[in-house]
Every structure is written in structure tokens, then in C-alpha cells.
Length: 458
Image 1: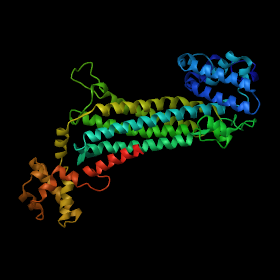
Image 2 (image 1 turned 45 degrees about the horizontal axis):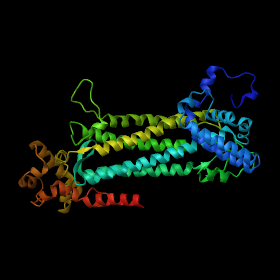
Image 3 (image 1 turned 180 degrees about the vertical axis):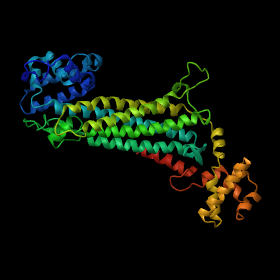
Image 4 (image 1 turned 90 degrees about the vertical axis):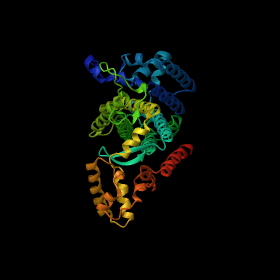
């Protein structure tokens, strides 16, 4: 039975019912709906709508329903009720009779669903924070394992300057740190309790909303009933956090796909995150990473759809808001699955340090170091930049690296160059020179690793 039938002489037709019903997806809120109902029963007892015995009967029945519901998701979704609130109320009435009809006193599905959805969002977001930190831990472990491995750094996908592989790992740790910070901020802002706001104007019963908020683990009760039932900023924020973080995961995936390619050969992915070809027996495809990259667009789409849904809604609740759930119910599990898969890729990766070093030594990645050498000799940087460009041209023509050019060839272009240039052009020297905060020198990367570890310990 619908919760609103008295006003209507006939019921909805089947097409409208199918179009209107949300139970096929909001059944996922069953735990939160029952937990919120338990808290509401206590609030009604405090204002004498329920006696102590009635409250106990309802709470016992709700606990029993919670136990039954947790293993019955598929059955609930196909049970034919309009939404999760209708389902819970009907099942409660089956257990306690007409007493179950008293529970909705002073409450609306508007504040009910807003509360349920915040509870679900908070719980899921907290799980994602844990997953993000676990991925960071895997990246730090890889950084320590490959601490001194040298990797070509790229700009425009052209070899630019050598960096430590550990420095590359810690770059993604930094990105994930921002993801964690954003998500924690979103959790803090969503952690307000709308229950007791009614349909839009507030409840007519003097319930203690701050106590309700505390019972449900919220930091506070919402302050405006109109806003409370129509606010979906928390959905937008979580989808924004998911989109930014998925963009980071996609960049990580793209780097690793490139490093894993036959053309690079810098890394080899483990068998448990790769697949083969139905035609070509030799193939080992980076499917896990490609799926992370592919699923990023799916999360972006959910964020865009939510913004479009909300952009022109008047206060307060509108049925459009029913569209808030499917996108988030898909995006957050997709996000957490991608985090776990990225962690599996990181944990199983093998790094070919000889190949990465050889690549870093090619492509004249020490050209900037040579320009800095000229600056130390009194040559203005812009002039030194031009000189090094000329030397790179000569090296390319001869099929050599800069450090392979003879001293007289170097002096022909710039007489200030001397034999002390060769130690400066070694890859290790290029790495060691980057001593400023955030650079790729060994001490700076070690400091970055230790700082992260200390932040976790704290």
C-alpha cells in the first residue's frame, strides 16, 4: 500500500508506478532507514506520542527487521513497494500491527530520506578514506623498495630530466593526500542531521533534534528545515571528490600503461591484474589499469548529471531529487573498486631499473644540468640555454649523448666549458643537484617519505 493514497480516488497505472518507484535502487538504504526509525521512535517517546512500552515494541521489531533485511537486498528491491520507507513501514506493521502506523507521526519521507542518504554517504565515504590511505601506503612501500631507481621524467611525453622512481611514487601520494583532505572535509560538512525537519516546515512535535543528531552519530542538527530537506550539496561534493580522485587514478593508470608498454619496458604488471588475448598468445594486457582509466568517465558523468539535476530546483523538496541516488550509488562503489585495483597493480609491479636508467641517460636529459653548469661559470642563463641547444644539435647529428662529446667539441661552442663538466653531466649528479624542498634528490625524497609516515603515525 502507498503511503499517500487517501487523497486519490484511483491508484497509479503500472507505467507510472514503474517510472515513479525508487525501491529498485533505494533498497540500499534499508539499514539506514531502520536505524533512523529506531532513533525517531525514541524521540516520539520523549514527547509522549509513544508510551515506553510502545517504543520498546517498535524498537524490538525494527531490530528484528534490520537483521532480516541485511541478507535480503535482492528480495527487497523486487518486492513491489514504492520506496524503502514504504517497505520498512509495511514490514513493521506486519510485525506489530497498527502500532507500526504511529511511527511516522511528525516525520516526512523528505527528512527521512535526507537522513538515510547522509548516513549511507558518511559510512561509504569513511570506507573510501581508509582505501585511499591504504593505496598511499602501497605507493610509499614501492618508493622505499625502488628508492634509488632512476627514471626519465617527462614533459609533453618527451624525456625531460631524470627523477627518482621513488619521487614519481611520492607525487601520487601527494595527490591522494589532497583527495583524503577533500573527502574528510566533505564528510564534516555532510554530518548534519535533517531528521525532525518534516516535509519542509519542521515538525509540530517538540522533539530534541540535537539529541537525535547525537544518537545517529551526526555532529549537529540542521538549522533550517527548508534547506535540510532540499540540500544535496553533500552529493555534489562527494561526486566532485570522486571525480578529482578518479582523475588522479586515471593519470596513475596512464603512466603505468605507458611504463608497461613494450616501447618503454620500465615495469611489468603482475599476472593478477592483466589478461591475455583470444587471438595473440603473447599478449599480456594492462586491463585493470585501462578499466580504471575508462571508469573515470563514468564517475565524471554522475557528477555532471547531478549538477544538471539541481541547477534550477526551487525550494523545497522536488521529485527530481530522486535522481540523486543512482549516480552516487554507482560512483562511490566504482571509486573504491578502482582504488583497490590500483593498489593491487602497485603491490605486484616489477620495476626494470636497468631499462629506466638507460632511458634516463638518453634523450639529453642532462641538458638543463649543463646550462646550470654554464651559469656557475658566469654565463647568463638565457645565453647558456642557447649554447646547450647548439650542443644538443651537435650531439644529435653525431648520435651521441652530451656527455659523450669530446672536450674540444664542447669548447668550440663555449670556451668556458672545462673537463670539470663531465662529473656534472652524470645522471647521479643531475639527481643530487635537486636539493631544494620538493626536489628529486635522495635526501629530499627520503624526507618526503618520512614526513608522510610521521603524518600517519600522528
